[in-house]
Length: 87
Image (tube, rainbow, N blue to C red; front, side, top):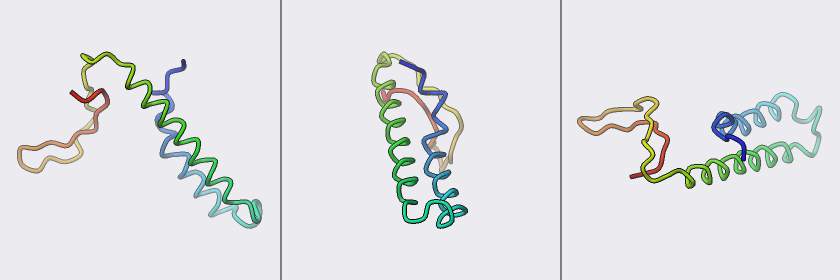
């Protein structure tokens, strides 16, 4: 199976790209079928999300969680963007 981590950026980018395409090219290009662009991008993002879920589930339980950056820190509690299985 391929490495899904290289394509993580596509999960939010596909629907965003579809929204931009529909906004700027909407009626002139797609006519009555612009909904297919939106549906296709949502399906693509869903497939990538499921592939990511299956790759995370296959990781060993002792895999370390890698923290990319801290979102916010109210008091002593920290919310971080992390990747890895939950302990």
